Length: 293
Image (tube, rainbow, N blue to C red):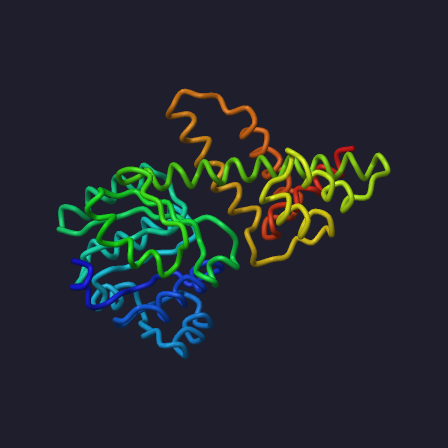
């Protein structure tokens, strides 16, 4: 059935979306239409073969399978309202943003009424993986629909996993991010304590990486950001981290579970934002930890 898809679309060409869309454009054998509120990535991708469109509606008018990569739930809902009003040629809408699972489930019902499949397929790993096509993609869809869209997701991801029916992809992604943020908080606290106690931060993390404290985030956010105190803009800002861990707290509330660790991380992120670091890469909460001593 996937062979019958004649055109693809992509809405949202931001930090992750531009690299993801670039992989789709380079690997797809059918036209790819796209749009974004920022003209710069649209112009860059047009040079690679993306067919630039001026609006959400104009993409829907051309694309049968549409990918979304947007900042969060409000943006996903706003774009989907436009798509539901003017669905054009759409047969599949694949949301690769991080948004509430409840939103995915409600949108799936609305799109189904128009004969359109809505799939949640949020992504994990760093910006580099978006550019190299090696993301981990967590999918919420029926087995049949998953089989139909999986080949297209593999343009962007080396690990594509069906986590359950619609909404399950978002649940897994939200919990993935919750664990990541808590891990980085533990690393930041260890670094602050270690350096205050006279141990070189790089040496500390080098030794931790040799034992059971090793982790992907130690070797990435830890070594590349925390140790050099490098918290760039346009990476994964504190505001985004607050949004995602907020979704985790909502899931916990729905499940009747009190997530004390996640709540502490949310408080740290919020204090860091309020200290003026809303746009910096979220491990900047090291500055808040250091300031608390």
